[in-house]
Image 1: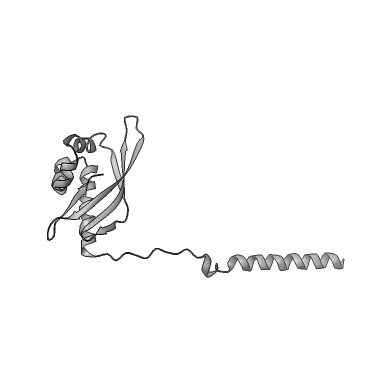
Image 2 (image 1 turned 180 degrees about the horizontal axis):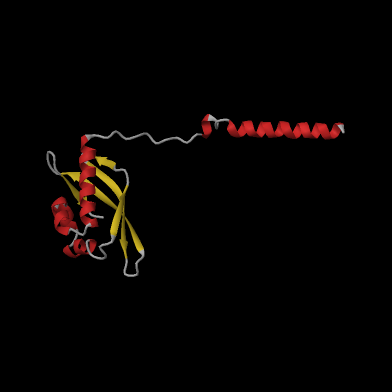
Length: 146
């Protein structure tokens, strides 16, 4: 009988210890470390705004609205067919954009995912990057097409 009581007491003690261990916060070394937040400034906000305007024009299949947002350099690097192909296909489309990274003063890179429905009704994803550059005092434009 004493053996049964001892094992029951040991089982209760073990259960209490496990419950306390589960309720305790993780040790300091086990906590996830957050990446330091990048300071947001007026240039970043302006660059992000142009990226969003360009991608919104792509999403609505409005090539005419997107063209003034593209630098001459980007237009020269891409053929007219390439730009037309970017805006061709299903009008059922969307995009995802990540936080931008500064490449150098006045130049940001945004990773994007372009989603577009194919002929069979399946979503097709295309991973790309969009580079936005400062072209004047308050002017920003897409310097690399996705």
